[in-house]
Amino acid sequence: MDTLNLSFDKRYTYADYLTWLDDKRRELIDGFIILMTPAPARKHQEISSKIHTVIGFYLLNRNSCKVYSAPFDVRLPKSHADKSNDKIHTVVQPDICIVCDPLKLDERGCIGAPDLIVEILSPSTSKKDLNDKYKVYEQAGVKEYWIVSPNDETINVFVLDKNEKYQLSGMYAGDMKIKVSIFDDLEINLEDIFKK
Image 1 (tube, rainbow, N blue to C red):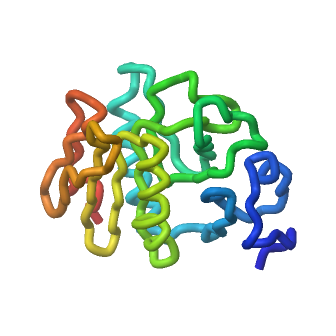
Image 2 (spheres, one colour):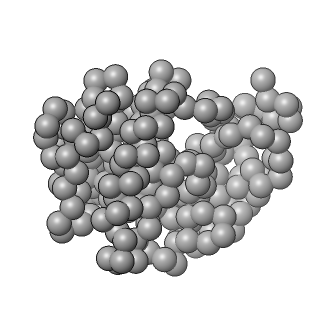
């Protein structure tokens, strides 16, 4: 139940989103409200923390890229010209994102496509992460998109090709290592991520 009596059939903007001062977490996909779960499961949080820590340690004193965890607003305008709050209809809070262009960062989060986004599946978000966000991130130009399955202990990595379409770069499980495509020398060992 949405306590602000917001309509799920109406299109909203980021300007509207900023006025919602209750404690509910929401995203906007093409202007439509998507309610988020109040708090992810413990396993989800542990996986998110491990990925964030590995990437954060790699980035320490290395370059201008920054890593952020949810809740962190990522505003995805339809075009570079339409960055005003009343023109933005998509606001997401990825589990993890990496932003390498400091001009995309402001006090409210990120405006424009991050370089890499990680979404960790849960029963309530899997359809949204596998379908809706996949399309949104592809259209926005997110270079690399990871879909993490805590139950299967797998990570599927999609990378934009030269036609700006996602291609499955790899399906990772067990003791495999993920080569992070946006960096020359970062590999992440799955055993470190899913270790109990």
